[in-house]
Image 1 (tube, one colour):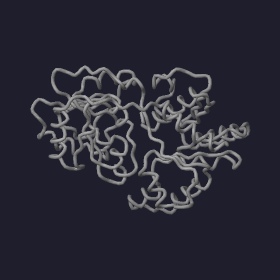
Image 2 (tube, one colour; image 1 turned 30 degrees about the vertical axis):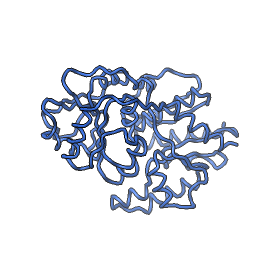
Image 3 (cartoon, helix red, strand yellow; image 1 turned 90 degrees about the vertical axis):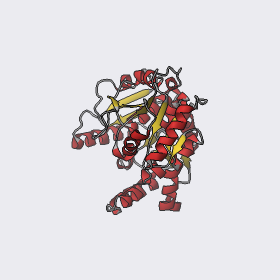
Image 4 (cartoon, helix red, strand yellow; image 1 turned 45 degrees about the vertical axis):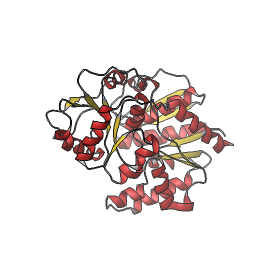
Length: 335
């Protein structure tokens, strides 16, 4: 389950609950039977979720073009395309207004990877020129786009952060022995190797549990759980004595991320150990116990301080909160 899928479906559902009539055109992913049930969401009359009938890209592309054309033909003055994928923006004719939500600066990412930036920069410029408004997932992403494109950006711009579910605000039930939890994807760029390197420095008897799988080479002492249904995660997190949010100090970690797990963690009040990066401080302030990214000794010391601390006041930002932020921007666009 990708973070993008979680964000899109919860945001769409929240906008529908707020009173918008929402149509989602989605690529077909691994969950096919009942996407709303997968995320524990009830069907709602004002949310029309349309999933491509196939995962074969050529056929899915034609389906998307046809679905977009039919939607545009029926569109009225107050209809808006809210898009995350640049490749789909140009499918909608100019009378339809587009709000584009950026989660990176594609040109900057290409240069960082030492790839040819020309084609992706052209697509990004065309997307930004087409957009009536621009949303970014965090301040670093907006700053990167402003540095790269300057006055070519839409005049209406907002940083609208991610959110989490109300059920992430939980009653703690710590396990008898200290367990530190990590939830979410185990991709290498998220700084997990530095967590593994720090394990020999952890206090005796403290265990690490990962929910959502683990990368190759995970130490045998680490307890690994597969991805669990959304409704089961709060009870698992409630057992933890501390939570881990590792990130590498790279373009993604320093400027372009707004981790969903950060919002999950903040809602619990459980002590958090996090990489000291601007993207984390922008959201969490001084709440986490920070460590220097890439430094195993610093991470172990932050963990010791977190385990000695008590719970902090939870900070809950829900998908309804996010929907209200988006709603305010959409009303400006159609005014």
